[in-house]
Amino acid sequence: MTDCLRCQILMKRFIWLLLAVLLCQYGWSQKPQRQKVGLVLGGGGAKGAAEVGVLKVIEEVGIPIDYIAGTSIGSIVGGLYAVGYRAADLDSMFQTQEWMSLLADREEEHKNEVISEEDGVVYILGFPISRRNSKSKDPNFGAVKGDHIVELFDSITGKRDSVDFSTLPIPFRCVAVDVKNHREVVLSSGVLSKCMRASMAIPGAFKPVQINGKTLVDGGVLNNLPADVVKAMGADIVIAIDLTQKKHETRNFSLKEYTGIGGWLDWAVSRPDWKKYNDNLQLVDVYINPNLDGYGSTSFGKKSISEMIRIGETAGRKKINELKKVKKMVGR
Image 1: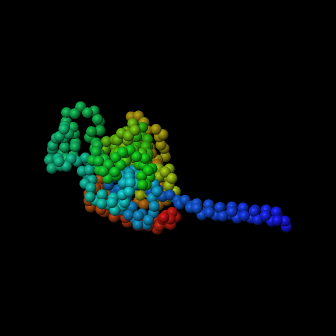
Image 2: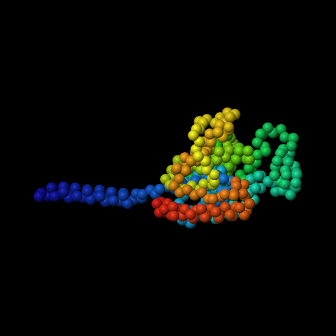
Image 3: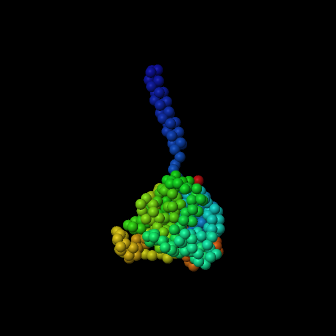
């Protein structure tokens, strides 16, 4: 064998060896992407305390949460969790807040007076009920404005300016409904406290919230368990905490548009929220539905809050094997 031929063979071997080393290094440097976990928090007023109990178990198992989507009280719990609060913080908040005063905009300086008036607003035991001699044409004055709860959320979230919710420590979305055209609105940016407030604006109880030219009310009107929203964010595995106690079958017909004077009547007849709810259940991998019979959306008493947190934790522990499987799947 000539020296030239020997050199060519050695050169080819060297090239193949070099390629093998490079390929191995590339392969080792590319860590496999773990599956992403999405957390869905349903609406249900005071029953949201049970979500806090479930979160305690999720944290105990050590499941990383990559995305959060919430509706109504689920947007409150979810928004706070997304900015960094954890189950212990939320437990403390739920059990120490004077929720009825907070939600009803009660004025503390008037709470000991049966009837009082200030700046044209009439109060009974501190709760605003009417406005005397007002030229305001606001048809929603009887509904609660929700100023106090917005002030609280501004303070505890530290997010007074408009932000992209994808940039929060955990990317977040909350659901509301445009009251004028009866369409779902997924809020992905804005002033966090205002968006949370819009998502919980129960029609008839709270004033709608104006955001980007839209008049928004409680997202539970159309999507009370937004599993589809968290899937759209990129979740591979969905954990849902559902506060719904009474389930309904999807009706056999639905209307495509809910506009005009009869919009809400059309909604009541076809109940598109039932269909969306049942469709979303099919997207859930770990379904946690605390038994909250006997509790309602206004059960904000301190004893009830404490008991619902405990019930939520119990419900989470019943699913602990499923949660541990998720933890094993995604690693840490």
